[in-house]
Length: 555
Image 1 (cartoon, helix red, strand yellow):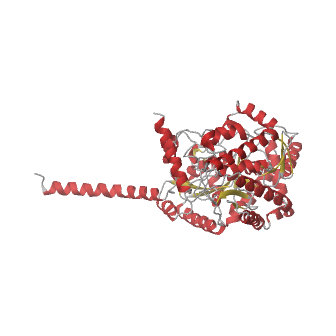
Image 2 (tube, rainbow, N blue to C red):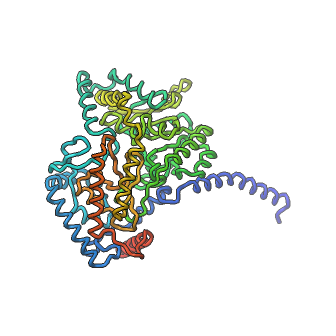
Image 3 (cartoon, rainbow, N blue to C red):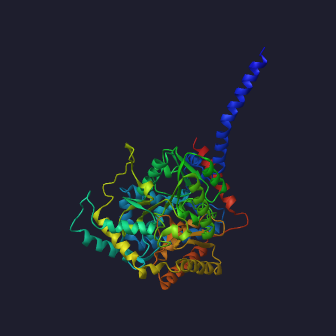
């Protein structure tokens, strides 16, 4: 029989054990509660779900009525589809042939051609609505493809094209002349770097600069330096945010190896602030200001446009308030606040998101547009965070490498870009920028509403996305009608429409006319049919049933 002393000892040990474990359990629970409830907030779960989704596709008999539309309407859609296919075949003959040949050897092209639409519809779309991946010239706000078709450019060159293609042609041409005497000599610096560094520190309001070869590499270095100087392991990113394609910032689908030192938390959440206030292992917080357009949601692409639940909801004041709260907590906890401005830098304001939202960062990363159209990545940071070695521990260093990171042609192109930006006359492009683009979005939405068309646009300045007001499985078809009207889109379709700032009112009016015309033709062809039983919820349920049926039918 146990003695009272033994029982007391065991009880004390149990209490002590519970006391030791409870804080860890509490911290883990707080971390879980700070995650966004969607799959974008749960990286491990999203990877599991992705592996469970079976492949299946609709044949021509089911393709046009997968939402339960009546047979006569499915026939109307089919006629519209093949009428559009004939137009594509005639208009893009040379480009389609070149694209098909190139895709056999270019893996990127295989991927983008496959994931333009939801996978159930992809094969038939690729066969009949393939368009040209090749363009031969640009002028003003238009591009011309290899078949001679001229289209208004809404691709924005993935965010690079802020001021218009002609602007970047001038930068590159000027850079080539200035760098020619030195050529591609690497290691020593071209003298122009000193001017670039002065301007970048003035623009960013930070002390020091390092050069890299891409935006992804710039973010990698910023995070590495934050970990080095804080002696902490983890970074925080927000659900849905994109910071390049390296492992630690892409923990979900697309990365074959799960990172273990990344926390994906909810954007604009008090629970996230609580985690930042209480954990001791967080080195830095990464903010991509573009997420303000669609917080906690992945970058919108038409391959994921399976219903009409996609929305955009930009609130500049609310996101600015969130960033101020984030800044306060980071100051209190010694966490490095990093603004990833690879996409929005120089587009929304002269000094970027720091100026636009009124919040200072500890480090800022730039890329894309900064080198006048050539590849670049830049980190700007506080002096104490940029240092890569320790005076008192000479063997404890923080490495960064990159053969081409200060290439003379890139540096002279950067100087061409920054010199133009330094002109007060040029910087007037930012005057009333939000009012201009918000007004244009409102004009287009008013026209779409007046025509009873179930599509709207949301925007963060000149970065737009389309979303849809009526439940449908076929919203992704709009990208093909838009291209047929002479609007050039990137492979993600209507999820990202990026205007350059040299669009005039006349240019935009032409784009708006074509956008409305495309939507009208899509509606006439029956793609936006619905009845009372068709909702986003019923669409998702139907898809789940399809997936279950196909998964178990294969066994």
